[in-house]
Length: 406
Ligand code: SAH
Image 1 (tube, rainbow, N blue to C red):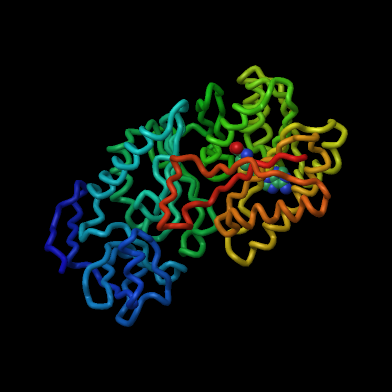
Image 2 (image 1 turned 120 degrees about the vertical axis):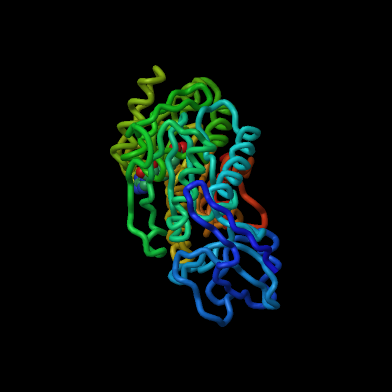
């Protein structure tokens, strides 16, 4: 069990996998770990002293055989997170290898843009670490204590492999508190511009890294924005609800549609407006609550050929699933009266907690309640630079349901 391995890391750290504390997995739980599921829940660990929170540890099966190297945090819902199924040190070399793999994958999967998600945490074998590359400027999110403690290993690897112009850290998501971490937003390397200009499908888009949401942009909707642009006909009227910096509306406008956008976030709306100017497009962007806009203002604009509903992830946990269902139901109920006959409705749901079948079911309920039949024309998911291993169902979070009204 466990080959001896001692390496001097480039930072001078001595990493020995044999010194690692061990944890034991309850019997019958090892198959999913071997199948690359990255999370071990509290009840799945048995006996023994627990390591210090944030430390690197080795996971053994019930018979004492090596399963994985990962990080431990007893305060987390997932106290052990799998980094590797090999008995290897989690040093700079390890991270550099992972980053090279994830980078090579994106080279194959992403085109017609200078920006992509280069690292999608567990789905790329690096738990808790998300990295978006906006035109060479990286934005990093660290979601776990284990990831935080390994900073001196992954940060130099990031510089080595991605050779970024700058790195900004935007670790201000809710999950950090559960991990016992503070919210941080700060430059990590180089000259970090607060707004980065990127390109996507022929559009120039400013990304408000410092003042915007998440890492600054929503690269996950790239494929759906393209699909909308490919489907609209010149002169079609498009309403982009929850437009953020204007992605769907601008893509549709560039394809010849008459587009409008609505968002509640002042920085998002200001950026959407300047993005329209940047691309010489005329798209009115309104700062409003999309729920109210649909009933109060949209009717005066006439009927829409396309309505995109892309609300935020209201359901971060199971308990909030009903709130998200209710929100989607309400949005669809309010959108249907302003949808033209034969018009298309795109209902997006970025919460893993509400799966595709239930999202479609909420649309069914709303269609029934409004008395307007809807036909399912297709489904899109997060774009391919946000990989979704089927053995890790939680990685598939974004589903967009494309519907046509009668
Ligand atoms: N469609 C966008 C991403 C949307 S993210 C894109 O392709 O880039 C979700 C957006 O919903 C955020 O911009 C957030 O500001 C906005 N939002 C949240 N609550 C809202 C509300 N009640 N009304 C309008 N916008 C809202």
